[in-house]
Length: 442
Image (cartoon, one colour):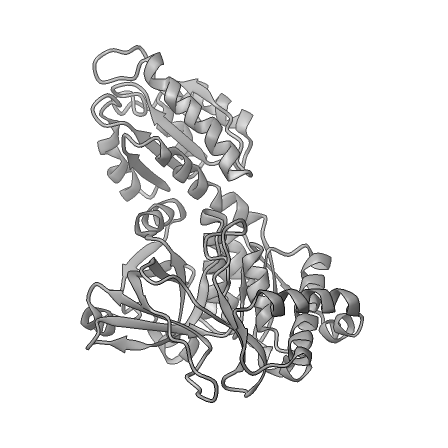
């Protein structure tokens, strides 16, 4: 972290007293985030900045606090803080306190137009320091991420081309070895499986169709996925062979369980959604609900999303579990999956990364979570209905005009990932830092 300029408490600059609450909030941010460590120093020229960046290490992004009237730019001099950061192509978030933080905030947009990965937190809210740090960590964490995959893949072609994923995001795709899933499943610890199955049964609000053996088979599949992830040192999972595994145990419970633990898991081979979930797991430390778009209801100004592998802990691994029923898979008429009942009234953000270069997004508020009676089938088990700003606009702009030929791929067009909360601004900040475009669908 760079304190840019020379804090002196003069007009249009921070004093030492102004810096004190910033330092205090950074200590709290380190504690809250858990995987961020600040290397803090002061710099007002390129040499001082370069020394600080060297100390922080080659992968460290930059959080810069504007502490002087022209602390970042030194009147657009080449011997200033920002030229040294730009030279090393490091992502940078500028934190500027209005009025007392100087004048350099107005240069952030021009710097971005020049192609620099920079975003601006122009706020008197010190909590924005933690949000900036949480978003800055995404890029180095992606470069260290490995995802376990099993084709066939869906989504935009770039997202399942290993070389392009590695080049653009730094994420390594690791294939499940042929036959390895069967080998691991054959050696699942039966006592461990029974213990996990009992927890699913005991914590459910009700058990509608499945019997205990259905749940036990689903848990064996879940523990198989756990073993594959552990032995490959994996941060995420994308499986396109789900339907081929169903006879041995529906993997949907396993996907829910992984997402709850902070390991993004995407079914249907959808690498667009898996990469989306990985990005936002690093940024928000919470899972997303990958679902099929059930349609836009212009009469109710609403959007439907549904799937059978919904996470329970939508507010993160330490958050509360949403209530659920255990149901059979609606399409396959067997197995055990969850029907999760998400929170009515909850603000929610829908998003997806496509072509490795564009984030689609829109927001809504959950107004209905259907509970389907026994004997009735209604598509995928977990469903939410969200009121949106303008259903007609969402319908007309679905895909934002950026999918191209991939719009003909049902899953590339159909799937979205839902997150508790309004993350509109965080998405825009991430786009600035990662060089992505943002398309607001509705």
